Amino acid sequence: MSQTERLDLFSTPILKARLPGHQAVNDALRQAITVERGQNPSGIDRSNIGGWHSDIDMLRWGGPAAGQLAQFALSTASPHLADMHAGGKRDFSFGANMWANINPVGASNALHCHPGATWSGVYYVDDGGASEEGPAANWCSKIRATRWRIWAFRIWFLKTPQAKP
Image 1 (tube, rainbow, N blue to C red):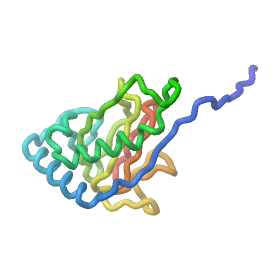
Image 2 (cartoon, helix red, strand yellow; image 1 turned 90 degrees about the vertical axis):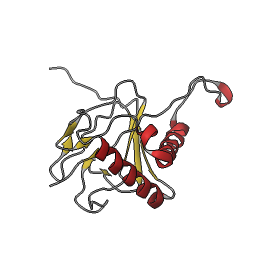
Image 3 (cartoon, rainbow, N blue to C red; image 1 turned 60 degrees about the horizontal axis):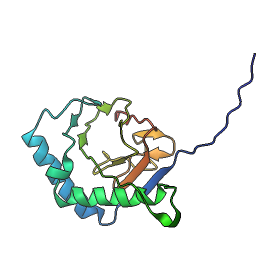
Image 4 (spheres, one colour; image 1 turned 120 degrees about the horizontal axis):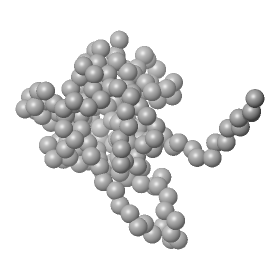
């Protein structure tokens, strides 16, 4: 029988940041999401199980608040990207795709990833009453759904927000 040695050579960074001015952004996002769901009640079928998933063009229909959230996500992740050039010169840029999910009690998202993406993130406009201390939807014991906070992580980190009991 051979022995296996585990070498942790590559970390998986997970970023946690609070969006400044979150209440005004959340109010605007909630309104935009409500309008979009009213105009497209069936949404699209992706990883959602029992919930609603918008199209992936939230930057078009989400208004200035969606742009503000995307810019915050990009500026949060950007300092954690490495490039191999002296003096901080970058040979690349990156952008964002966004969508909304509405998962009522009993709904969830299947385990999934986002092919072609370097980073992925999640932001809860409404966490369904969960808190960091309470029984929240979570990926692991350290990452819980929390309003006003963005979670950003490398794309190989598979995620499956669990159904709310």
